[in-house]
Image (cartoon, rainbow, N blue to C red):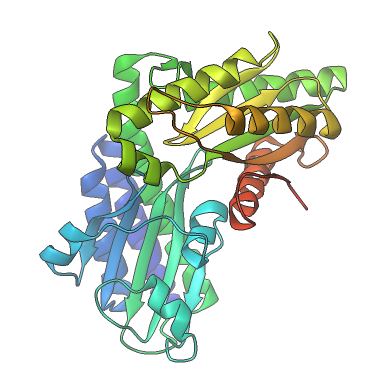
Length: 335
């Protein structure tokens, strides 16, 4: 990046940071981010696409260069292609020439075709919030260095949304997710930190696993909102009933659960994960007799990771691979 552009980038980042520090309302921050990205790169389109926590569909929170009708109607499923990999693992998408990468360009395209584009993940506390999309009419408008710049702006956007969520959550101060009767994600993170400290002191191991309900959106569409939420609570109860006193389980996302199997090595963690997977597969849920399965990702501390950040990234990669490879299966990080 040339010096003038670097100076412009630093100036914009400072402006956004000042706004971020001054408000708990994320909309103003997102507006500044989109405006500055468009000005820096002369974008044809720039959009902040977020995961709706209630449905796990992608929605456009704010966009430039898009019609109001398109933005309002936009509703895209999470996938296991390039966008799915971006949202699960944080791997950025850089399309230098849309004609040379036509299939990928079609997957990430919003309302209009483009010459080049970048998509970068927005996440906070290892929870995916969405992604930042920027494209230009010209080919090769973005370099790998520009991807890093846009990732910084995406991180600002994620922090703004996360800060707003924490502000709302602090008003409620409740550790329990009442849709599942399991721990909320924020206090569960503290439990992981404590478990790492204990493992370091006592030279222990523990397993961390994420269970993703297969075909949850289809189930919700077929049986309705109330039945799908009842199923979530019943699966949460099934998981809870199989925990020891030293284990823990929490709500990870709309249709995902996170489980800590204390003082367990890889083999024991895999065995327990398969018990959970099998129990879900063999159980009939709600009075509608709903059948479902789960995809499970596993990582073990310290075998797969030395820090909490690494451990959470490892288990997210593992569950993504479990989904991608067919569902109703268990994948250990690194397989």
